[in-house]
Image (cartoon, rainbow, N blue to C red; front, side, top):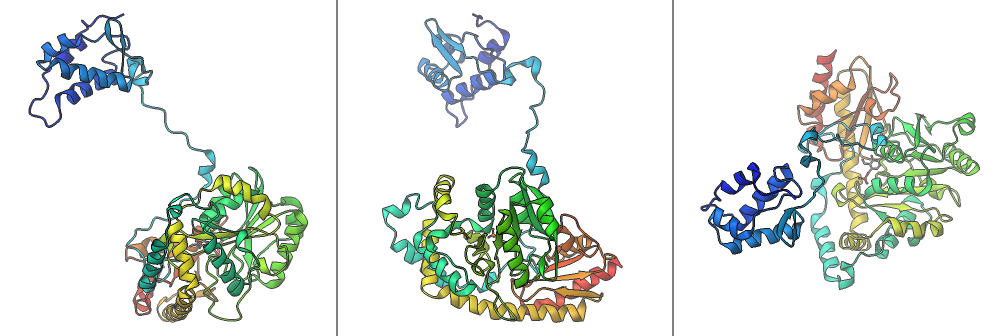
Length: 488
Ligand SMILES: Cc1ncc(COP(=O)(O)O)c(C=O)c1O
């Protein structure tokens, strides 16, 4: 056992405590001893002075010294034996003075290296940002009423975890809404309420793939879809998109054998292409034949602007090999973080149990309010109003591009949703345009940033019109035109 006569211990005792500090003497003493132990100045096994001697040395009451020791004992910094109090063995590297090197760098999962960083945008940089709905037009008053209704009908049970798959009232409201507006065939039991589409995508990967399985993604394609697949340790293969949507050949099916295919058939993100019925049927037939599953991300097709409504793939054939994913981020507002996954009918019984192990439910209040908002008809009315507004905003953006962009370009997409894709020559690097645009408070996105294997034609801008008022389109596009001219 070491003796208490080491110089560090004496130094510790000699320094007076601060009597004018608001921190009580007992806590100061405790902290001082703890810091010295953690720094290795009081090594393990060192016997501390008896409380009486310590009290005399520091001119404090013996009770203060005893209380400090008791606290250190309770936290495990010291141990008590028959003779008194001894510094405990903490086994922190800080104890080994000889090994006082810097701590090891944190080791992250190697799969994270494949995630591609999204371009940084600040909260006040909102104009032309894709994917954001008209936030100022959201019917706050009706939503508040729905929240108040949910609060009034709350029972002690509502405060519990809730059904891991989501509140049944909301699942039922989603199932009947999807049947009417998207032609999706499902029961409320097939619907899982998720934290936005992103959680639904993550779940699909976890539920039906093994690490190393192959997944196909549209290229250019949605970053969130790719991130979900990459974080699932899948072999992610880019598939080009032609005028009919995701393009594949019979050889691709034989040589690449995908387990999962991520697609946005009703409004390809970001190009805006609508997958033809022939391609949809061919994709589902091939998936069926090869034991693959299709994730149909139907993120913004509620806002159809021209032509006949396009039914979801999920409802085109019976027993479709499709996991249907949707979100309220565009139809309501993104911070609501509510989305849904529709399980394929034949998979639903198998997945009930695993889903109950993986999910914990919760957010019952928002879910019940959302169900109420839908049941009371506010959701459908809001969608109709927004459809008209987005049509006007898209039209304003199109004519501003025609008048003010000033460089040869082609506009793609726009038959539904909240964004347009504008391609122009690679002489104007889209990344440079986006960087310059951010300085003017605009947040368009660079088309090249959506491709895993960018090609020369993947150069342009993805422009959101959802949250950008009609009267600002002209001045904003004029600025974009100036930026492009400056790059020429
Ligand atoms: C293709 C696509 N899917 C899904 C989403 C919505 O994701 P979340 O519901 O997680 O907000 C977006 C949003 O921009 C999107 O562009």
